[in-house]
Image (tube, rainbow, N blue to C red; front, side):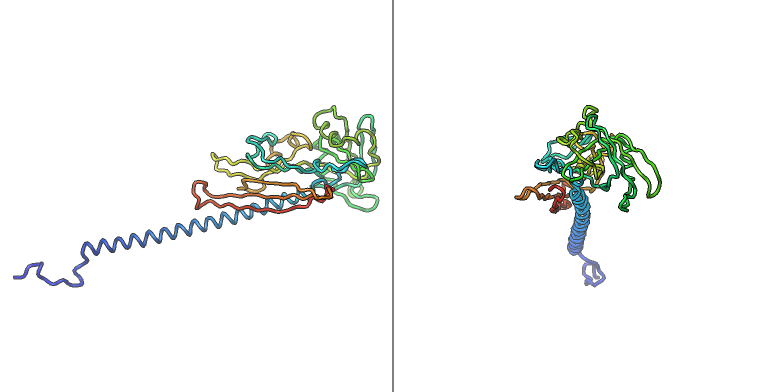
Length: 337
């Protein structure tokens, strides 16, 4: 009589315990390798996506910086009286490597970054003036601007009208020779006519005792206003001041650092229209550093700005997920001569 152990083993008898363990081990190893490969490619795809977003953010940021820098000094703000050296720092300058809590109005800039300050007639036209009157004794005056000049040049008056409605906006007045200028607060705008015959009479004053805004504007006009040496006013524009800075991230809300811009009344620490919303106009996310260097040519009349931004995305605790990019560009400041 045969026992169960004496029967020969067949293909259908099953695998031994050792074979089962070996097979299980191989399965686990292959699965672990596949999972590791999947995770690696997932992280790589995420890093590539982050890199693409950072590249686009830097393009957006540099485009806005270049556009504003090309308008720095537009209108002749850097030109003073004949014989005086120009003051390019009135149009563009940099606050380097700011300390923690560096104020941008009611907000703050990220520690160690640069703050770029730009002034000029950047977002509106330089208007041809039909008529003007200035009283050097009181510092008061007015200019008349028409929608269509006597020479047939069309001018959109909307920005000038809006500046008058807001009050205290800076009116840049350019003399006939183009070598002198003055800055004064707008006090009132009177409108008349319609269509191409529409005209604005813009009133202003140059009395620095009327407050910090008027005093700041008078400081930018020192030597020509209100001393009565301006001569005939031929062009006017709305002078703007913008500051570009890095807004620190907020870990509590999950918001990362941003490149942002703020608008002020020129030469003051007062937010434009006295609204905190004027201080925070985001441009690009995940920009962690801005480095700006102004370079003056040997002749002293040509300037360039070197812009370098650093963008970063991903989890700082995980090097595999962290992406960092550095971008740079060079802008020639053509209005600072």
